[in-house]
Length: 372
Image 1 (cartoon, rainbow, N blue to C red):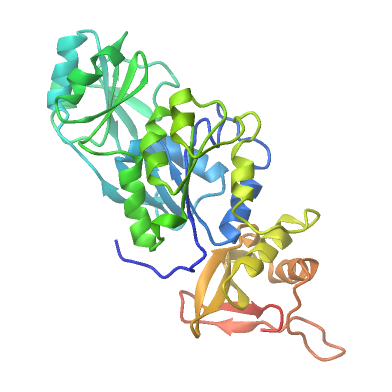
Image 2: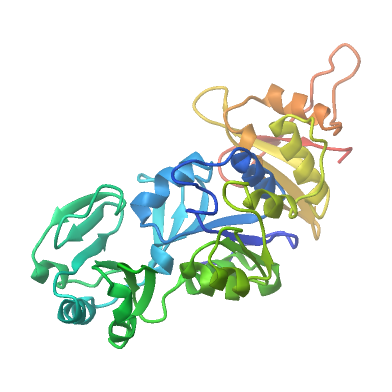
């Protein structure tokens, strides 16, 4: 991965999905707005989930996280979510292993075990059918030889009492995460969410002390140990809560919301989402701010970002998520609502004075804020 320039205030916020951001398919009220404000403050939101890629993508879209980083399959896969990419993502790293030894060991200790091998971006190859909802994506029944023929990112072993055989499975060299008494997730040696997240952290040049993680499951334990600030959801098992620095509310209480709120400056709660994000970006930036926008095929904006002057040059500070799909006039209105003046023409022509912005992707326009 090539390194990128970021603002000094940026924090990497690693968030589990199920039980943290999503409650049985439902996203608690206020979650998307809170994520948008955290992003507008310059923080890097990284989804870190046990879900496979095909299970992550629709949730990421619902959360508004269509551009950014994600870790899935308990750290076996690191992806860059990219709105412009043909599939909506690019695989940055897949951590694979030979599944044959652990599958044969599972068949020895639990002869009726159901086996599923992840197929990235599509679903699973399986030895027996799994119930709807047990696995993300499609399923294809194959022979055991097919399941063991190629390196895998992740496999699932499902059998009554499979957790009792964790040590025997682990002895084959793999990483075993028992997700219940009858279910085990298998990844390569040393693979977990923390390993993948640290690779993202290094790419983004975020210092270790500026890391936050929130989760609720035993597969989140390595991630919680990795983060400088770790937060367990209120409904998490005792072992997870005891491993974290803090415990927040349950998923039903929207427990992730106060954690996200603690990372952003206070803004007027009466502001519209767009105005609140602009105010947050301007307040959190390390220097003077301009708003940069780019158009799509029509008059609506395809990108809206806050750029800040740092060490004598302009650098991207944060996205303004609610600016996408709006217009330049809407940006002007929201900036005034947030109390952030911008240059305007003489009396009789009081339109905003946008400037051309080139040199970073397609040509766009920028609006200086607060007398820049």
